[in-house]
Image 1 (spheres, helix red, strand yellow):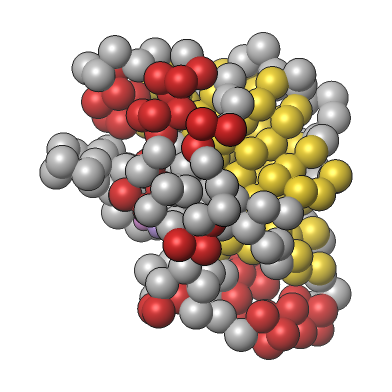
Image 2 (tube, rainbow, N blue to C red):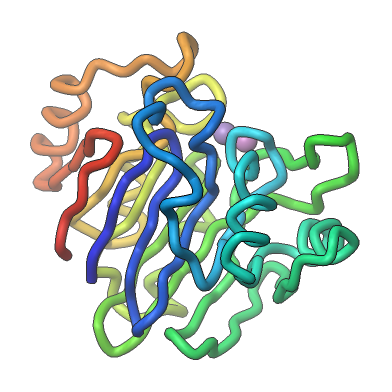
Length: 226
Ligand code: NI
Ligand code: MN
């Protein structure tokens, strides 16, 4: 499974023979200025919630690639009204796609679309197939609900958690989240993009190491094999 980070909470993950883009926010992000959204090939775009720093490039990428948006019912309906195809989900539900199974799980945050349309409740995704199982938390506080994930999903191979604090959990809470979800390999997101979420990388890595866990902070544009 190949994973590329495009800054903030944007990831391109190749799995099950398909390309999945998570929360595309590239063109407005100065830290991702080297990347052109027309270079991104996507079959599916998974959106955790409606905030601009998670959906900014979803419409362009979807239209360029004839990609399917996977999100909550409200967000998918908004994109469908723009002529983009989608697969609506809601919390606690799962669906078997051609690349694997996706379960839409709780997040504690807020959600509104860029034009003020109600964005439903925010969520995260657990994705699994024969290759791997991973969790993309989206924007969330640390929440007790994360303890449900190991009870109802396969063992996680890795998880993508926000660590930037202020708008989401910070790295100290993210260590507890990693314990709740019983996962030792965490990839960080939602840090450094804005002043409010500037993060001390070494302090974050040390906090995880002290708990016996690995925190990976990728550079925008970096690709890793998992
Ligand atoms: Ni948000
Ligand atoms: Mn955000």
